[in-house]
Image 1 (cartoon, rainbow, N blue to C red):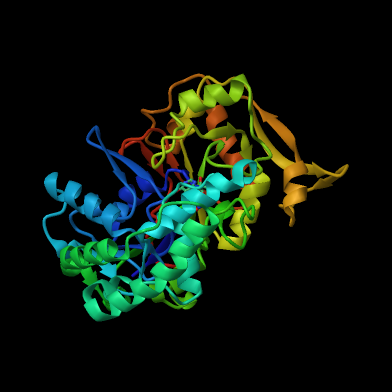
Image 2 (cartoon, helix red, strand yellow):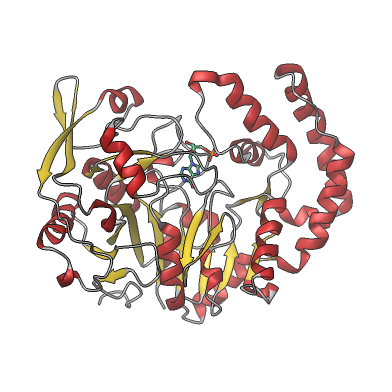
Length: 434
Ligand code: IMP
């Protein structure tokens, strides 16, 4: 039995979906534990593209059970749409392969409306959220007013909770933001219908997870977003509203820290960010544009162009610290082919001083100037490479430099979007101690 956490080491979009899909055949359980349908995982299997937002990326592997844990916020409309698509494509035939925790909180119409109203009102201070209602849903959860998935099956409790929320939420929407109110009766009817349709999928996922661990199964925890979007460790307030570090698995899925064996940090071979907020190695000119084009860097959830820049080892070291990475996966190495000289930020210059650690305050991060190291690039297409030794010498040197700068071994490399376009230098699920 091995448990492995796959966690984004940057600002999300590191290619976790592809990695989880590649790792899933080695696991029996794949578990989402935080975030919601703000995530977007693009998978390419046999040339066919699938974008998943809530259902764990393990669903494409018929041998896996996929759990949506208590720490996730669930938009039933989005979840049902995804289930319908997976069913229509013949990927999901048996509801028992997708289990949704009755304890997960539900994203409701006013969460979506408030997310948009607040962003609109914030103007140039907007976070650039995905507009999926994530922040407002987590807000109701921590203020103990939220509606949970199991409540969708309890008409009386649901009615009472909706009536209570309607009063507060519509007050804010109408009086403060001058938005349209949400019709509580229509929402109630919709929730009952969601409950009816979701019932075959609702379960006590904590028990399923515990049972799997007792039976010695391999479990893969699928992180969403990334370390620097974490509510505590990220570039606050330009972050999402959940914890996006490996420790969040314990609370969000319901296991103790002693049961986590390995933590795989996932990074691109360069850096991207969607939405607002600081980005020290961002390239706003032609180079950023070339990276965006070469890497097809457009958001899977919102279609927004992603901001692009060089790899940042200061960030990766911080991510390794707060997540306890046992290994790294470097994705999209192929995108750097033909870029000439490559740069990696090894430190920042802040207020005239060189800092090797990620700064504490937003002001420092915003004013950080990267200190770069230049490495020779490579021109050869690496998409056919399947062993580390097959890579051009400069690509190998680039990867080895990342290992030295971050202090974590690079175990997996992705050289293209396809499942098979992957180089594994070790067995990710090997038993602990090997
Ligand atoms: P929210 O999670 O929709 O509230 O958005 C907050 C911030 O996180 C925004 O900058 C989003 O662009 C970013 N974000 C949320 N989910 C993802 C993701 O899956 N990938 C990349 N960025 C994300």
